[in-house]
Length: 103
Image 1 (cartoon, rainbow, N blue to C red):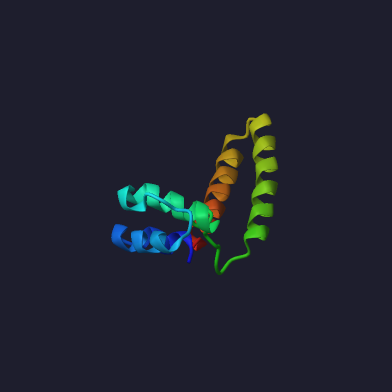
Image 2: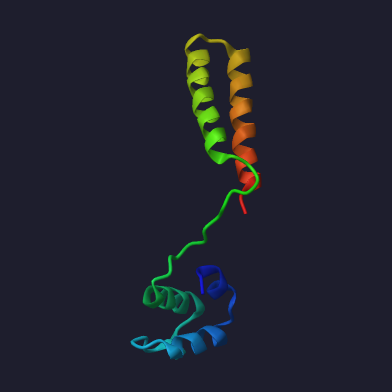
């Protein structure tokens, strides 16, 4: 069971899960967020969802972004606004490609 599955449950289902856990008292009086936190603490489940990047090489894209950031700083110091805009747009597109590939 993970955080995502717990979060999708109804309060009644979460109370059934909490009833099976030893040491978790007062679950019938808790609201959904309180139940979720208490169950996660007792079962040692992290309180956030994990997202994975699928279909692209994230490490390669991030190294390319780092290279472009140095080019951006150089263009900024040289006052080359056209090059600055190009580099910033490339960085933006690469970051968006990572976000689109995140599941």
